[in-house]
Image 1 (tube, rainbow, N blue to C red):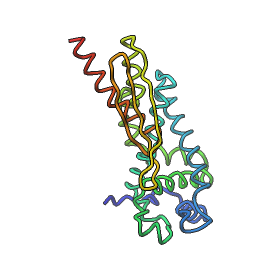
Image 2 (cartoon, rainbow, N blue to C red; image 1 turned 90 degrees about the vertical axis):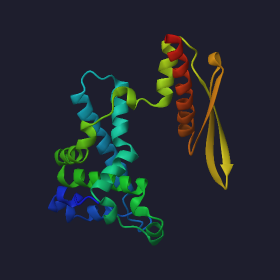
Image 3 (tube, rainbow, N blue to C red; image 1 turned 120 degrees about the horizontal axis):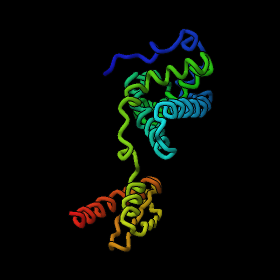
Length: 228
């Protein structure tokens, strides 16, 4: 377990504020919680990450900048940062969430980090908020994956097909239900190569991305053999 405490990065003014307590309070514990702060913090984070990328990657186009930003502000990245700073141990939860492991929930701890960013912005101002974000995101900013790695499966599949003047894939998504849980199944069809791959997910996007990834692997193998 990392010993770094998020409070070491916060001013005394923030730590003494009621907003700090609010940022750590999940809706399961009180009607006065971090949801509004999370909404604001999400916008603050998105702005300062976009600002950083715009300044430091002058040759990137809009799509590349968007992919970098999406990678940095996604829930997985936020939750990893929150875990590194032991933020989960500070979150105030209702009894039900405590029992179900809410302190380790990706959604709960990432939301708390965004709420905390909002508190820093409101209490100490935009300059301090910018520095706080750059500090906690430092290792992720410095180790961004390559532009190609950041592309999602649908984008990579589309670009590969276009490079060979092949028609684009068709996606057919259906909603499924099992044990009262809604899921999605997508078929990715590439008629020119008689390919039909399926993907599953808790939402439409996830199911499409899984199907596209399977199709991408097949198409890449086909073209690699042709080019050999």
